[in-house]
Image (cartoon, rainbow, N blue to C red):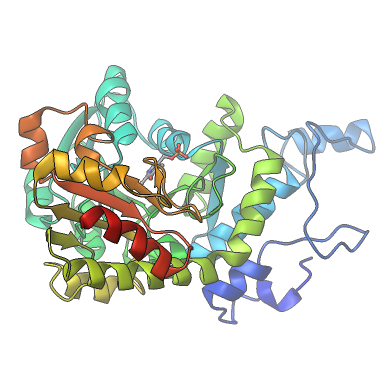
Length: 399
Ligand SMILES: *Cc1c(COP(=O)(O)O)cnc(C)c1O
């Protein structure tokens, strides 16, 4: 039983902040208030008959931490509740959450349709590895549902998108893409890393799966790697879980505990991240030397209305293009004293990066230009420092 019995009552409605603080916690007989870490690889049975029943699946209970672990399960239950899903499988990283979903739900001869605005390692995973198993992959513009409909094939099983995209913050219409997927007998997966369930709940918009890199905002303090797949009780609860418990890309109990505690502050952190980001975007938009700011919360963002309709917030990724190309962008980055020069995001610390020569450095110049990643583009993942201090740090470089 949970320490807050009403939290498990499906007839009651709880907001994301409440679920983040309360859902999924199951105190032991010690009645601890903060969840315990179960650092154990296996679990014992009271008798041979009980062990047999556990292994046969006739009795619920823990066997081995590759299958289930109470700390990991607490994180899974909490995240599932926050996303509004029936099941969640936690994994050792965000990338292996994506791999587990593909391994569990696709087979040779199937086709995967993906956004061309995905995290770089996701594109590498699809293009360099998934195709080796006889799964075809095509890439489509996340902003254009009609292009997805045209790219559908009879064997398309999965559509995969991130919204907002990185680094240009393009918005995909989740409901429209879910309709395209379902019309063709396929499923839609949304990587919800940038907005988290605090701001966006893809399942409520028709998506079938939510992917998380818990490494980012769910931890929020840059400590641990982890990931998760959220969805229904058959394809995630049984199929993805089956792959995970067999192949073993499981989350460690310690990391699960860090994320479980991270979820308790997710709501306040996301709002504080966004508050800083929104003010910075407006301010950057007014600065000399800044050509263009990319942030869905700005009224001038081409998909501001869609972003407003499908999410409760705009997140903390702000990109902007400076006049003077690469030299000016590098000069700005090198003149910061507070921002960390790193491609990571979702940390308390503000990070600054030059996408054209880092995250998107390995794709051809033509492909970069086609994707709108110019040499003058700078990406910020806005942290939790004082707004005035971040502003002053960027102002120095812009002068
Ligand atoms: C970081 C990231 C991933 C991969 O997660 P890891 O935990 O680093 O494996 C996937 N998607 C997005 C959007 C990310 O930012």
